[in-house]
Amino acid sequence: MAGVSRQQYATCTKLIRVMCSGRVDLKHVLRAFSNGADGVFIGGCHFNECHYITDGNFGALGMVLLFKKIMEHIGVNPERLRLENLSAGEGIRFAEIMNDFNKKVMELGPLGEGEGIEENALKSRLEAVTNLVPYIRLVERERLRIPLKSEEVYHEFFTSDEFNRVFNETIAEKLAISQIISILREGPQTTGEIAKVLGLTPSEISRHLNSSSRQRFVRYDEGLKRYALA
Image (cartoon, rainbow, N blue to C red; front, side, top):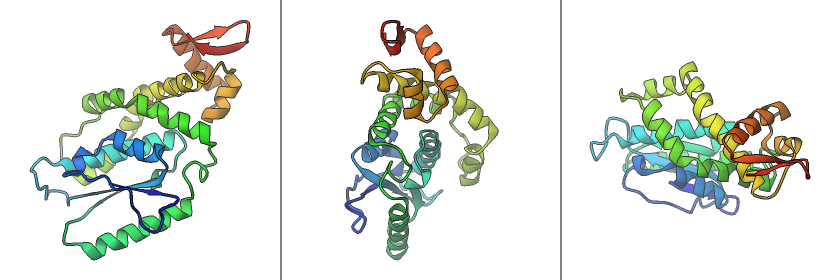
């Protein structure tokens, strides 16, 4: 896995080396983005040519497709994350892929700035996702695991209405609450202030705040006329 930062467009350094792409975890990708990488590249074996007979590259594909959905949900361009399958003998192809990805990252610009997200808001969104990783892993294992190892099937599922339904019912709801809690750690906020940071409507924030209040995560401070952590 390689993280490309704004100071490293030309060299594509900051490598995390693992034996199998299936071992690349959500937290690895989140750590790269949180530490200043503007793009993350993951290279894996060709499908159905796994060196360890574990089909870990399909696990990597599922993780990447799920994380791209999460990136889109928090306002980060999914094209900042790229997975390619290639062999050790494809040096020329690898160089071409990295040059292409390097060009794409340069076009997208610095993470957050290219999306029009303020630095603190970006930090809050990435932190919220990081805090939710154990839950996301559970949802993936229980409801998003695909038994059939086929690249086409994976892409079909992760763009299906069924996937979107499960994502919205589980991860999206928890992610919104996690983001709100992360924001309130900085101090009490109004519904409008939270909505501005998250890029959601005040009515959507109110719904999540009501849910968070019932779960005793947040409370409304009558004196400040703002929401705060419970």
